Length: 139
Image (cartoon, rainbow, N blue to C red; front, side, top):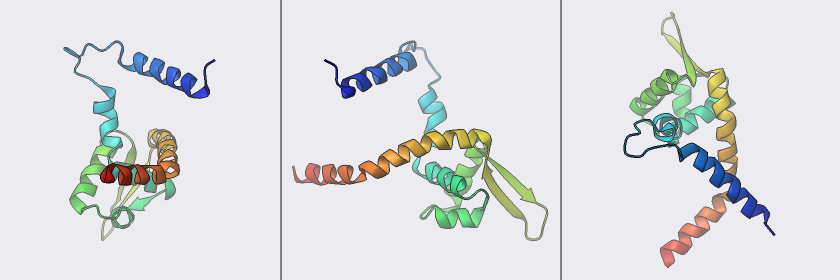
């Protein structure tokens, strides 16, 4: 008799086969994981996406305050890349000083819904990861 876990593993295996089964590793140049998800899944981009999901509109300095530890340069680079991929929009207002605001696009919100599933998993399993790290260090 199959357990729920075995059934879940089978479903995952089928999805992975569908994703990678057609790829010829010797000639394939496009990889959706590397080319699409790499940017939107790095630690800084994830935090940017989460904060822009929580706050509908943020200015650069406010976003930098929330994404603790990020430099101006890295934040600027990530915002440009996320904008170029269509996850967010940048609106500049002709004021003195210039006001620039960032917000998620509908496409960005669709990614955010999936990202929330992952962050909820990470939150609920964080203690397990910490315990495993401690066990690994003492082994």
